[in-house]
Amino acid sequence: MIGRRWTGVILRQLLLGTGRFAEIRDAIPAMTDRMLASRLRELEASAGSRASARPGGTGRSAPVRQVRG
Image 1 (cartoon, helix red, strand yellow):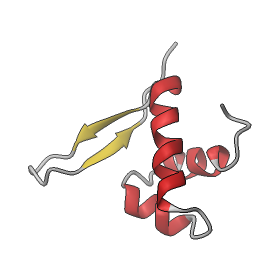
Image 2: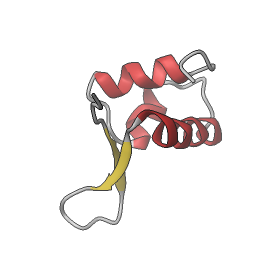
Image 3: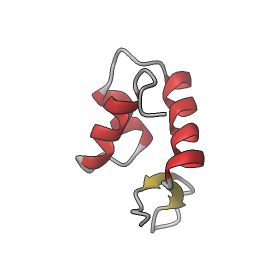
């Protein structure tokens, strides 16, 4: 999974604290929205990150990093 195109860049953004889809998209302008959404879904399914609702009831979600060990 890590070797797939864009995955390393997405993980870097998440580790830097970028958590919202639009923030990640803006940080990686060469990547399409569709590809970003696909990679985030793959990461969520395989790496232990998950989407959770943000406080405030906006109806939006953001990825949350978890460490499994």
